[in-house]
Image 1 (cartoon, rainbow, N blue to C red):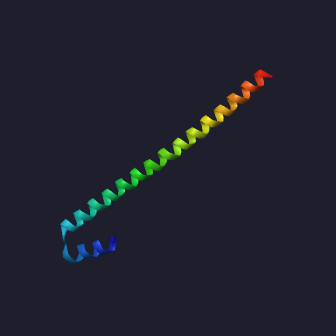
Image 2: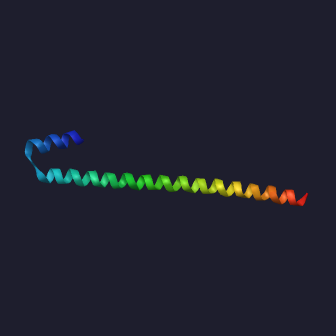
Image 3: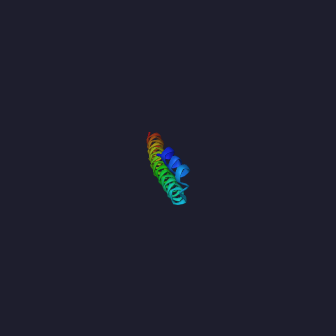
Length: 68
């Protein structure tokens, strides 16, 4: 797709086509960044859950050792 835009811009010198391409590229980049942010958030949530689970296990073990 990129190559088609470049070829068309070179043949026609169409600045609107160049502007449209830049707009689409920026939109795609924003969407990619948003997707990366969503993935990062999911990863952080999973890490948090794992850390909480480990903390609960350690607390349980500590309480069990106090009860003995």
